Amino acid sequence: MMAPMRRAILAANWKMNMTLAVGRAFVEELLARPLPAGVEVVLCPPHTLLHSLGKQLKGTSLKLGAQNMYFEESGAFTGEISPLMLQDAGVDYVILGHSERRALFQEDDGLVGKKVAAAMARGLGPIFCVGETLKEREGGETLAVVERQLSGGLAAVPREQAGELVIAYEPVWAIGSGRAATGEDAREVAAFIRRFYRDQFGREAEAGLRVQYGGSVKGANIREFTGYPEIDGALVGGASLKAGSWYEILQAVGQQVSAP
Ligand code: 13P
Image (cartoon, rainbow, N blue to C red; front, side):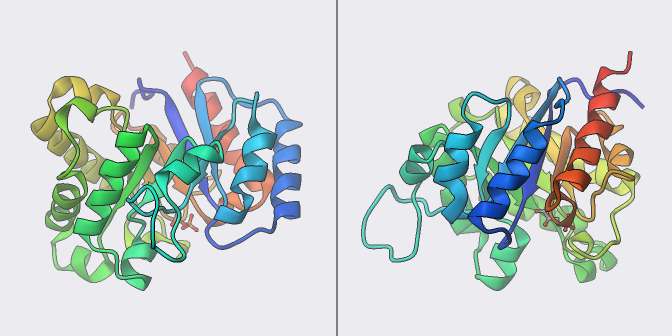
């Protein structure tokens, strides 16, 4: 196994957790420790924390991400938040097409595709999520499902804007279940995603693509994934909610990328 060549990226998806005080204390605790070089670290809090954390993270190596957005810049879209507003809050990345958005809020590939293109047009980095359900995996449909999600999600991305994208492979059955995919299963899908991207946008764009694995990642198993050259990091839910368990993941990957 080779160390990844692109810059590793670890993103914390706090989902609908944390109040402002708890989030700010988390950041303080994290910043009191030496952060690993060679690893990009992104915190994705709920929207209400974005502005405040944006200020707190300014001048640090930590990046800020949002968990969702709408594709329009402004207008009569009650309850939604726009790319412009995220940028205003100091956001660098935005998670799009998460399986919870797809399953609980009926987001389809077409909508996700509009969001991905709108984020890229604004200079926000999408963390675009794909992944199959257990039924789909057991039915041997994993790659077909991921292909459909990639086609829809990337359909509106102009060739000249491709590259610098993060795609998270998150098998739905591995999310919050304590049952992570095997490194080899994740590698197979990550390689498929890379091939798809190369075919669609060319070799140069693929060089800027980073693929994450997500689903029951913790300090004890992260290197099973990031040890493969096709996998550049992880999108983490549960284990990112405490500064201690999140830091274990950062350290594990930090040691891996700095190993000769
Ligand atoms: P868990 O790490 O809790 O399995 O969640 C993964 C996830 O959905 C990250 O987006």
